Structures are given as C-alpha cells and as structure tokens.
Length: 384
Image (tube, rainbow, N blue to C red; front, side):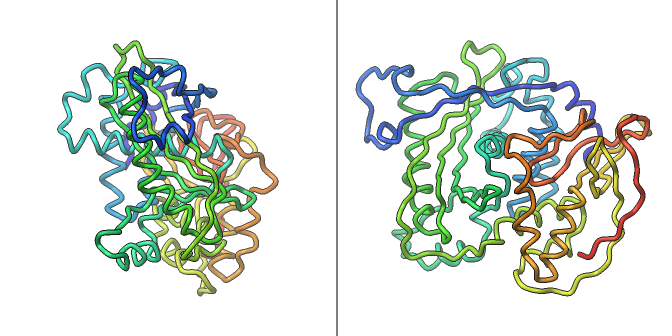
C-alpha cells in the first residue's frame, strides 16, 4: 500500500507549526472591534515539532479512526504529499508554492482536512492525550443526533481523546490551505463556529465527562508566504453534563486500537474489540521486530525502495497483549497500559530513526534488516 513512502518521508525531515491560543471570551464575541490586532488577540505557545513519519502516522491514524473507505483517503494523501507539502521547506511546515490552486475545491478541502486532523492529533499528544476515538462514527452519537428535532440537529465534534490517567477531552479540527495571513476576523469566525457548534454541545453530553475541550484551526501556507503555517486553538472550560451519552471507560481505548488493528490487517480482531464484554479469542501468529529496546508486533505493509527494508505498521507487544485481554473480557490491563510512561508528542524508542512511535504504543516506519538496532524476532502468538 505504501510503496515509496520511506524515501519521501526521509526527505521531509523535521518540521513544525507555530501555535497560538485565543481567549475564549474573544472567540465567543459576535464580532471583533474594527481593525483588530493579531498580537493583542493571539497568545503564542511553543511550536509543535514533528517528523514526516509522525505526521504520516497521525494522518493515517485519523483516517482509520473514521469508519469509511479506509484505503483511498490514506493512499491519496501519501501519493500526493510530495506534491502538496514542500519537503525542503524547514523549519516551518509549508505547502508547495501554487499547489492549492492546482486542486479542485473538493480535493483541496479533503487534503487540508486530513493534514489538519493529523496536526490535531499531534497537538493532542503534546497536551498529554494518548488515546482517541472518532465521535461521529459512534453508534450512540449517531442515534442521539438522529433523535434530535431537525431544527436542533448538531454536528458531532471530530474526536474524543483520553489521557493515560483517564481524563477526557473533546476536539474539533478545522484546517485551510487558503488562509494566507493571520487575519483575526476570519480566524475568529472559524474558531467560534467550531466552539459553539460542536465542542460546547458534546462537552455537555459525554459521560464520564470531558475535562477539556479544544477547537483547533490549522492554517497551512505556501513556501512563498511571509507568514508561517500555524495552529490556532481555543480552550473552553469544563461544562455541566446534561442528558448524558454513556461512553464506558474502556470505549476510547477500544476504538483507538481497533482502528490501528484494521490498518494492520487484523479486521476480525478489530471488530471484536469494538464490542465491549467477553468474546472468544483465537491464537494468531504475528511477526515481531525489535527496534532498539522496544518490541513491536507488526504487519509488513510494503517493501521499500531497498530490498532489505519494509514499511511496517504495528503495536508494542505489551499493548497488543492488553488488547487480547480486553477481548477476553478483562479491561484492566488495557486501562493500565502506559501509565508508567511519560506523556508527550511521541514515546521514544532507541533506533526509530525512520519511523514513529506514539504514546499508545502504535508504530509506523521502516524495518531495516541491515540496521544494527533492528532485528527480526520471529513470530509470537497472541490471543486476539
């Protein structure tokens, strides 16, 4: 599926986006004063830094969280990334000059949304949130929206995140290739729509409640622009839950891992994991690789440009074992996984030079047989 991705992502190197926070009170205003100044409204935060592997990992993970035709969205992004993203423009993430104009409206919106969702996942990791599910795909959310009067229908926010210590967060992700400058009024309008139309409503509906909520707007600029690409967010306070939709404590993690199992080709295990309660498990032999000090159960997605390299998607072997326990009816190991690790953009693993490891234990990268820190461990049996 991923073909020459390794070569492309190596050329990407490390990039970043500027980050700004807007005050909730300013975002909720009907309109801003005349001639508003960006510097008086936007508070700068440390930039988010990431490799090409991390961005691809995040975009693909977001796609697989959404229940739809999984192959084409991710494949479309990968096939076009070097035509859309300027791989030589660093440190700030930039678009190839003129590339947005070459895309029709649907394609431009789709690609902007995908990259924006990937950046939103990386932003959430930087805030300490490791696990995620897609709200609009959840049957309870779909049923809730359908039961509302047509005049009161609400769009679901994009994602429900969860930290290692079980704190939850609602996030709505917006993105654009056509916001060339940090213009306060249109950016405020986009954040306000996301906040009042999606984040507010769902923060007051999910039980156990979300402690945090974010409306996030990623504005990606071309290489020729004097204004860096930026991620702008607003962070409203926790709200009182009313008419709650019950999201069991293991649901976010189950859906988080079901998405990645689907990418790994373990669709039956993914479907089983999506249903809470005890299910019959089956023994599956999965290839295991060691990278530095970490071991990952993987699926080999494709061969790279060099015959001794393979593009892999996988999971930390401990994470995969906890998934098996959850399928067998014991959520304890799944809920405890990762609590002794530090939160952050990515959990480090020695030797992952051409790859990405996320805090949930998911891995995406190149396994290189010729590397001194890579080793094929054989097959390990998991009950899934």
